[in-house]
Image 1: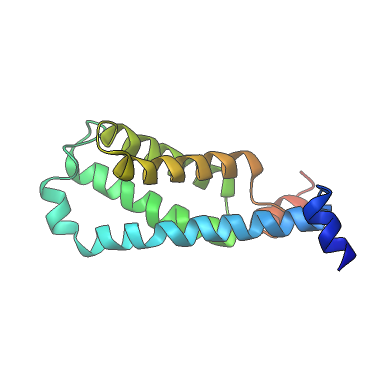
Image 2: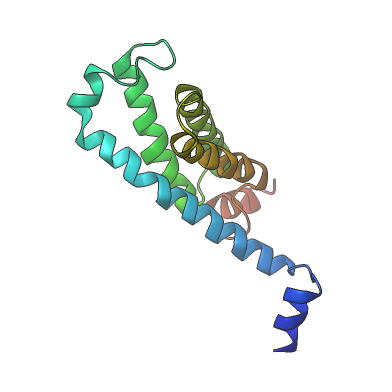
Length: 144
């Protein structure tokens, strides 16, 4: 109990293993929270392909939609398991940057969600997969 009180009130830093668990939980949370958005786009593919947010990056609505689905499904799943965590987080951050640009002049309630995800994915791009990730297993074996 004293350790908990010290941690809360004395601002004791987490031990390395604790930080690794927090990165794991944060990574899994961020990936699982984005998956339903991508799955929704798969389910509504025909509707979205007709008018996907006015072709947000200028490559056509269907290619933009496919790239968004890739980011929101494949990269989110990669984050959950910790596979290519930094590239997955960077792709998701770019996806949320585009969504932020699209919603820039909407009310704050609409704009805040892509901004929140953007901050989460930028943080994960800096943190990487952490100790409890497939990335860690792959790069430890290769001696990198």
